[in-house]
Image 1: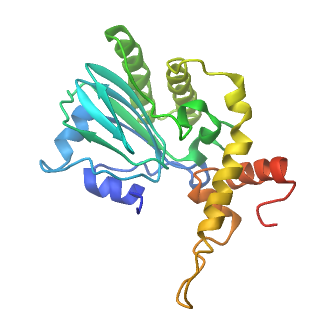
Image 2: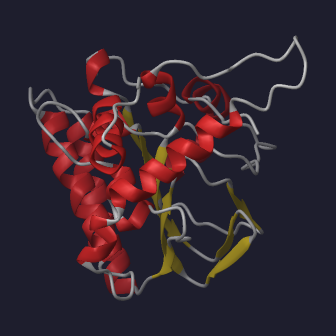
Image 3: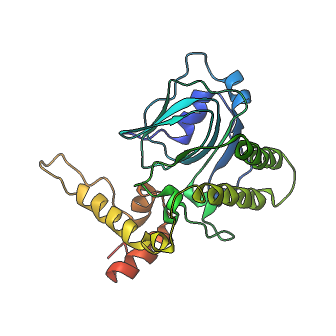
Length: 248
């Protein structure tokens, strides 16, 4: 299944992409659903596919969210976290205009100034389907955070993306508090999880049955990109578990 790229996303929604984020800082953008609804085509659909980016959404109104083979009903308001590795879809959508969502790459959170690793966090573990029904009070609290992000991305504050990362971290921790029994053991298991995912991907490269078949993923960075983590993070965890670097 080919992931939807950022370019495809912007083309599909007819929305604009920020052009002032340094290339080494990854990608980030935030949307008010009411603004996006004015831009996108009437027949635009939320296709069942996986994305090349993380997504956090405040869903206002009832809808259904389908993660892989699991469907979660959002009765009134919901908070959704989407991992790039899991296909998901909104179905039977009855969303109102009061919602928000933001999209970002792993490199946006993991850089020289911030060491937040999405794949190492319980909220983005692939064995969770993190969409939560929330109360009206929680919806108001989350709306305030999203409005701060919307305001900041359009400001001329030099360090606005650093501040936005702090707001994203607040959303992540807000969601993790909604997961029952989040323990420190889950965080400690991150190296083992990423190592297992790496070896699964490595194994897939060698299903070569004819001279026409080619190894598709070759470099450490290509493996890291496929796993939606920073290459330094991949190296660190492989070294911890196996004693070898990605290249080795």
